[in-house]
Length: 319
Image (cartoon, rainbow, N blue to C red; front, side, top):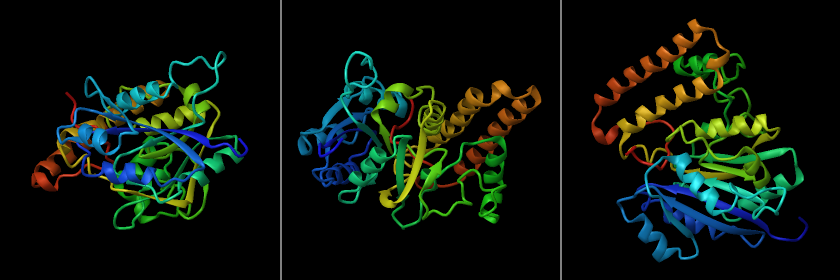
């Protein structure tokens, strides 16, 4: 690409994100001259003035107000169409972008965080996507940026806490790849959709995000499809990005709790169930339902303001 500026499309899906989105969009302004950003915000029916905020304070950002709240993947696909990556014919015309950054509104990028990640993808043509180390407000890591593909075994180890008891054991630590040091750059199975920088060629080859997922699991699904298309996914801890994880799911955590466990069923049925014997399919499916029932009871016993669901997605409740 030489001295030319890398063209990066940024896809952000929002739902009642007025409290966090300004910091995210302001941080994109600080990414320096090495990248030319085309930012698209897709709003999923916010009632807190998010669309007006974007129009008034960030006029250079393209705003799409979704006709319905179809979830994170639905909103992301609207952004990809606006960026010209889902309907273009690769054999007939050049790609309009070099890279796409899938970004949550509750993130904040340090100044010039993007250029080194873009440079990494330029140097490493086998890489389809890269993620920085995501950190929470208290400085702790968000392990979703450093994950293994879920299987019945590593999910069981995670639920039972075996990966926390023996985090350095490969046998138990496959869910978050906890046996790999967080300060070491490496190939991983999947990273979080909260910050995923993807080669535009890979985006076009893999296609739209699966809209059967409403709010969870779609990033794992997308990384698996990248892998099956021949690309590797890279974790790069030399860049750190703040992720205020949980801000969205706290808004209505019980509907999001349902989506969290429904996404497990969608992923399992799509990627594992066809090859599993019937007894295992039944055990996994009913095991997920049992986990949901137990967590639902636990959450209902807590005050509404203290309910929380794992990895958040800023999409809000299903309509």
